Amino acid sequence: MRKSPGMGFAIWEGVLLWALLICAAPATRAQVKPDDEATMALRRQALELYRSGKFVEAMPLLARLSGVNPSDYVVRDHWAYCILEYSKTLADPEQRKAARLRARSLGLEAQKQGDHSELVETLLSIPEDGSDAKFSDRRDVDEAMRAAEADRARGALDKAREGYLRVLQLDPKNYEATTYVGDVYFSERAYNRAGEWFARAIQINPNRETAYRFWADALAMAGKNTEAREKYIDAVIAEPYNRQPWVALRQWADRIKQPFNGILLQNKSTVKTEDAANKTTLDEHSLSAGNPETAAWNAYTATRHAWQKAKFKKEFPGEDTYRRSLKEEAEALDALVGVLAPEATSEKKAAKLDPSLLALVEIDRAGLLEPFVLLNRADREIARDYPAYRDGHRDKLFRYMDEYVLPKEAAQP
Image 1 (cartoon, helix red, strand yellow):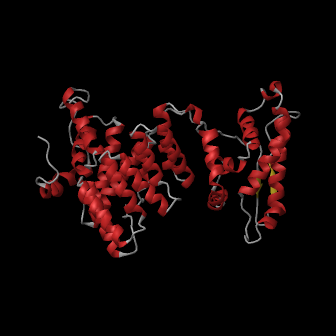
Image 2 (cartoon, helix red, strand yellow):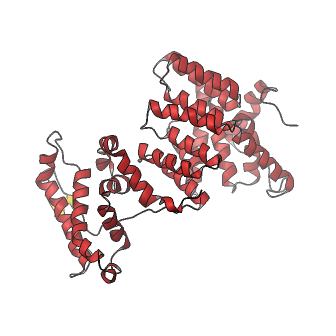
Image 3 (cartoon, helix red, strand yellow):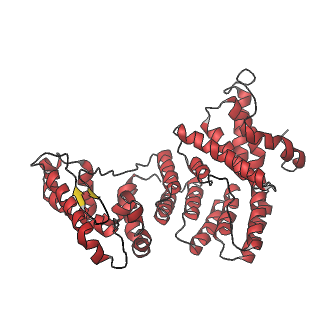
């Protein structure tokens, strides 16, 4: 018989569950076969508990299954996430820290094995020192959130929802509490109600990705993939330099067989800043003389060289130190496209060009070169220009994702 969440919880939490944080249950293949009927039934039960938000109840089952079959990455990832959730139920700070570190270590193991799932990304977001996240500088709000999170981890969904609503009474604009009310409804499979709360969270802060991503998951679970696609795109636009929205979008695209177009433009020439005097070196390109791509990359390099020598100071008088900017990269790529555009109009000549350069010509013609730079070629320096661009050109960012990264004509109904 399945144990109810409250049955003997103090003993369970204090002894056995804590042991399960250290290693998987010592089951062996001789004791239980990973593919026998009983083990598969246990796996289904554990994952159903997980999907229902009963993380603490699912954790020992997933731990046992991970011991039976260490290569089952789905079980391992879900077990690790349950450990993370379980940490929220612990009163002792050191035990919380140990649990979080255990969850993170499993995430690192998964990453080394090539697992880059959304769950693994969540595990890797745990601080390296295992420190707790702080929900608010206000002590009453922070304590109320921690209590609600502990109830959520135990699967006490009604109590958790009441806790999040209590937080919102104290702090009506609390993004996490608003999002997590929606997440409780998601666990209850009330996807429309969940969406209402995710929409409220987005009103509070449209530049955080979590509510968009959670809403997309809810829409996908409800079979509304056209709407889900839009929300996954919105999540990327909110925080494009966070891996989680990209991973979620790619996993969804793979699941419904939606083509995902990643345009990788390989540089053939670069400009290097050598010292504080801003001396620059133009690297030799690897293309032959007479190749139209050679002239194009020369134009790109010359433009960037001009920015490093003098133009940056003129365009950004408020910044003391040179950095690579959106304006520089867009102008340099526009110069490159200007050389190649005539070649691209000829079917015979275009066939000899790098496909990524042909795609770039098309993107430039569509007026979407800046979104391409920000979403495909941004480094830490260019990324500094993103918030201002997003504030004024969210529509262009969406168009780029909509038309080039996830062509909507290929989306599933």
